[in-house]
Length: 43
Image (cartoon, rainbow, N blue to C red):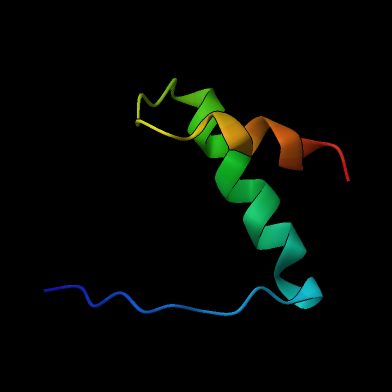
């Protein structure tokens, strides 16, 4: 089983975060309460 953990956001993971958001929109994922992700695509 995969384990998940809370990770404090750090600037060195910015590329990973943007990649996750891009993948989210690429596959048209429908997850409640994710509208705020649009705010993070324009750093």
